[in-house]
Image (cartoon, rainbow, N blue to C red; front, side, top):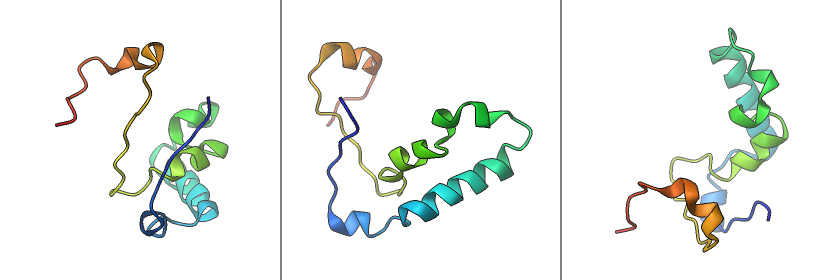
Length: 84
C-alpha cells in the first residue's frame, strides 16, 4: 500500500515546486469554492497534505495508468475503456 509513481525528469521539471503547488491549490479552492465548506474535506479538494499526493498528477501532460492486478482494487473500474 502507498502512493507510488514513476515519472521522467522532463515531466517533473514541468511541475510547479511542491510548496508553490500547495499554496496555489489553497488559493484556487478559496476563490472558487468560497460558499462551500470544503475545508472539512481536504482530501476531496487536494488541500494541505493531500495537495502533495495530487502534485505529481497536476500537469495536463500526465498519463496515469494502473498496473495493479489486485481484483478488489479494480472493482471500481467497470466501464473503463480498453487501453487500445
